[in-house]
Every structure is written in C-alpha cells, then in structure tokens.
Image (tube, rainbow, N blue to C red):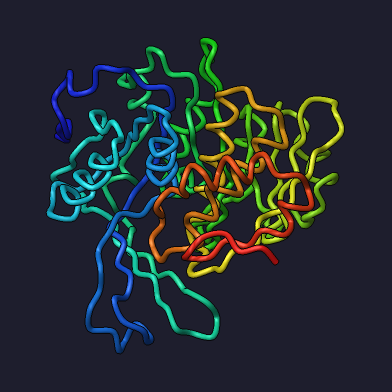
Amino acid sequence: MAVSARGPGCWETGTEVLCLGESMALFVPAEPGPAGEVRVWQRTAGGAESNVACHLVSLGVRAAWVSALGQDPFGYALLGEIEAAGVDVTQVRMDPDRPTGVYFKETGTDGGSPVRYYRRGSAASGMGPDLLHRLELDGVRLIHLSGITPALSAGCEQLVRALLTSPRAGRRISFDVNWRPALWQDRDPAVLSELAALADIVFVGDDEAAEIWGTGDAMALRALLPQPSTLVVKHGERGATVFEGGRAPVFAPALQVEVVEAVGAGDAFAAGFLAAALRQEPPETRLRCGHLQAASTLLTHNDVGEPLPPGVVAELLAADDRAWAAARLTGTGVVRV
C-alpha cells in the first residue's frame, strides 16, 4: 500500500492552490552535444503541475502538489526538491510497487531540445478517482490540472473527470491542455475537449489546438469552447489572448526574450496568470504576469527558473505598450531595443 510522503501538520498556513499531476526525475545535459555523447547530466524535477506549484510559491501563493511517486531514490529526491521550493507535499503518496517516471532533455540538435520520456507504469499512472475523497481542500481557492494526467491511464482520466464534475464549493478549476501526442497514441484525444469544457479556466496553445481540433484561430477556439468562463489562447512568441464571458477578447504581446530553453514556459505562464487572477487583476495584467513568469523559465535550461527581480517585474507591468514592446530580457537584465 502506498504511504503518505509527509506526516500531517507540516503546513500550518493553508493552501490556496492545489496542483495535481505527475512529476518525474528530469535529467538535463551538463555539457553540449547529443544525448548519446553526453557523459554528465544534471538531475532536477520536472512535471507540469509541480512546475506550476513551484512558480506559484515564488509568486507568493501558497500551493500544494498532489501526486504519487515511486518509493525509490528518484521519488524521494523529487519530493525533497519540490518541498524545498516551498510547496506543500503532504498529500503526495509514495508507491512501493510502481517506479518514479524519468525523462531526459537533449540539447544541441537542429530540432531544438527533444524530450525523451520513460514513464509507462509509473506511480502517478496508478492514481484513480478514489484519491478525490482523500484530498484536503479546506481553504483551497483553485485546483490546477492538465491534459497530461488523463492520458496516463484510465484511472487518471476518471480522477480528472471526477474532480471536474464534483461540486466546486466556491473554488475554481484551471485546466492546461498540455498536448502530448505520444501519450495519446492509444487513447482518444476527444477526451480533452470534454474535460476542458468542464473547467473554469482553460489554457491552450494555438499550435497544439491546431493538432487536436484542426484550428489555432483564437475566435474559432472560443466557439469550440464556449463553456469555460476564461479561455486563454497562447500564440507562442507572439503573445496570448484571453476570452472572458461575452466581453471582447484581450491580447497582450509576449516579451522579447533571449531564449535558452523553451520547455516549461507554458507552466510558468499559467502560474503567472493564475497568481494575478487570484489577486483579481484585469485581463491585460494577468497576461503580462504570465509572460513575465514565462520569461524567467525561457532564460534557463530548467523547467522552473529563478524569479525575475521584483523591480524588473514592477517596471514592466507598469510600462506602456511601446515600452513593453521595446524591452528585451536577457540573462543580464532588461535591454531596450
């Protein structure tokens, strides 16, 4: 039987956001070159929902991460790393029978940074709807999910569906589509439409939407998903558009960034947007907060980068459209172009 990762009472301030989903041991090259030639790797933690939780904590939001890890060295290492970031991990279960998933990022290839996953039969894939009744939701204002979890197993799909169809009790649920085609080879991706329609806040990239639903046009996507009160369509380096209720869509261009690594930027964007949403910021500010948090990850090889200096964030949030467009973030700061 799986056991709790941490005893009760470790976290006394309560949780505002609960993020649920798989995290894996992430290995990134410590030297350039294709994977077959790299001899030194750096291990860290990687997973959409735990990434969001870590980003939220860096933004001053009390966040918990719920998942299952193998009762193995990688599992305990991940647990410690995510806990060290300030995330509440008291609801993570350690599975003695299933392993912790692993994945590798490659660098130095013409196609960017390919990612290789080794997650079949992982501890997180064993999660199911029974977990719903064990969740500690007192004080939780938002639950964050992604389309990765329902692709892991039938039980995981049932868990996500149960969360989305259960009484909200005043809290909202956000759902990042997070299209991973390799995970859906034996499953029907139409499930993503059904689950997204049940959420309150939905994030989707126009590129992944084009693969799933045949269109990346923001207005067409809103017509396909009219149910969520908030729909955020991401346009990569161009920016993002938010739809809310019957109001006109709001677009905010992305920042120019000296990109080191793009993987993980979507999770950072979601966290920045959600943190601003919890503060009830207006749509454009929420989008800018998402872009700023994404920039912190684009500047690093890791899935969770160091937060941008508060002064830089305040300056850019207050900037007019021209100053925002003229700013370029590099590893050394803001450069005006």
